[in-house]
Figure 1 (cartoon, rainbow, N blue to C red):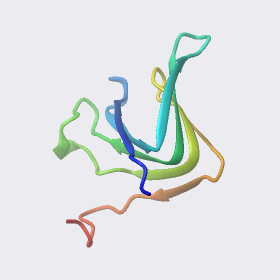
Figure 2: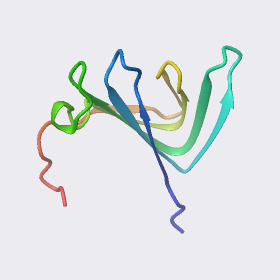
Figure 3: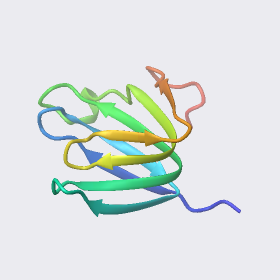
Figure 4: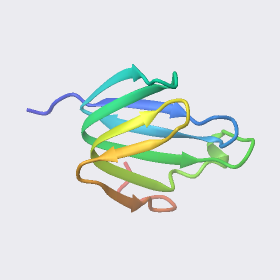
Amino acid sequence: SHESRLHLTRFFPDSSPGRVVLTASSAQRDVSESGATILHLSGNVEVRVITCAPGQDRSDACSIGSMVLHADAVDYNEKTGEIQPRGNVQVTPYPIGPSKNSK
């Protein structure tokens, strides 16, 4: 059985344009002592970091992604954008340019 996957997008603070695309089997949110919300993602988590030119968050100024992170679980701080992977972690550079197997 193929469990449903969650797809979440979070935008970085204005100081560093871009966004992070999170995919996981399950996610829950809680609030840390500092008041930041933490997303706890688990189940074959994929984190794709998409960076943009300063001051621009339009698709033409954004790279498709500078890296892809896979982990068993990830804690994502929605305030700072900090990513804390847990378990079996793998980071791969994202291919630049159109991929050959794109639909």
